[in-house]
Amino acid sequence: MSKLTSEIDALDARLLALLDAEPRIGVLECSRRLRVARGTVQARLDRLAARGVIRSLGPDIDPAALGYGVTAFVTLEIRQRFGHDPVAAHLSEIPEVLEVHTITGSGDLLCRIVARSNADLQRVIDRVMSHEGIVRSSTIIALAEQIRYRVLPLVRAAVVTSIE
Image (tube, rainbow, N blue to C red; front, side, top):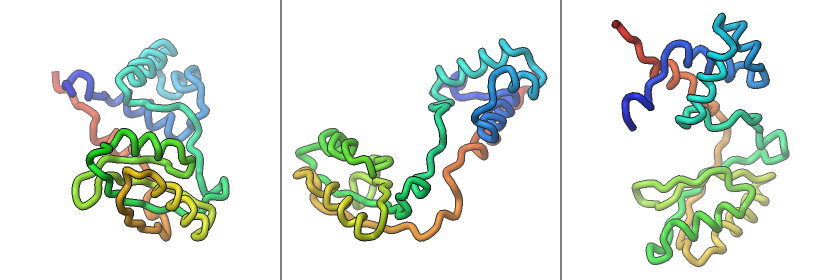
């Protein structure tokens, strides 16, 4: 990634922190709180979205509040002749599969999945394993969330300070 597309400045960081704290805030209120023109806020949002810094303005949904209180991380080994794409397509059809990453190490894919209970987790794993391209799985059940998914520390660390 080029330097131009990866840098954010202090105003971008303040805007992202404000949106993280109050996701339903409007552009006009952002401009008022940040003490910049509405057009500046809109231009910054558009630029951040176009660069992929802002991936979503949707709600942050808690699976546990929907009744999916069990979170597990599943490492999958796949048959290499099938490749990752057919397996990923299969996994994308399972609602309880929240994310999938290609990894290095003993496994090929790492999945974060949720279930309603431990018994339901078995049903989800059985569905995951139903693809002929998956050879083996290893499951780790999360007991408690110690640090929620977060990116604001990265935003603060990514701020470019310019001495021009």
